[in-house]
Image 1 (cartoon, one colour):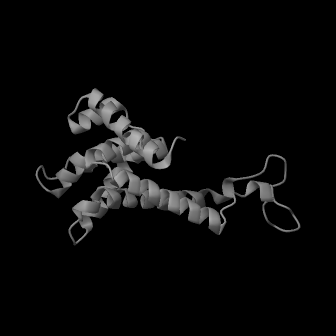
Image 2 (cartoon, one colour):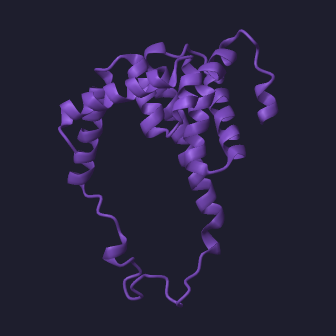
Image 3 (cartoon, one colour):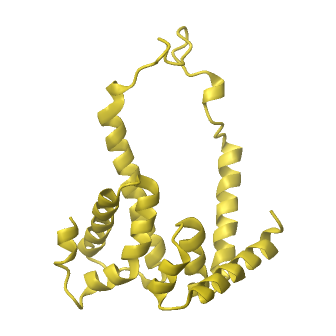
Length: 185
């Protein structure tokens, strides 16, 4: 699929998407798949899905929208992989961890995702996103790329055409803001 990337028009929406989002998407997928080839394929698939859309991509939400597509692609890929590999698993000790009489997993192997925990997590995520929205766009983007997407500071600096020192300052500013909002961790 990397060859498809070379076919994007030099001045069209595909080229603009590629220039702005290729590095962050590659980082996003590399962290989750561990395979450069898979990351390339998934990045290209994000671009294809966006370019197939009939309506214009809302610029205010472009980044959120693109990474939502990326997350959905990973989820779909995980489902496909899981369904193909379902019969390949077996237990070493002859049991599969389930209580034979109930057909269910032992309670200590199941993560507690009760409604309260889900609601608290959603509220914490909304608060964190709101706090990040209070930052300038570049500060927020640099912070997300560095802290969440684990991009290297020099890669971020090259992406934005700024110095590594500037990247460090953006990250420090965002970290300080989050510490003020949420208190010390």
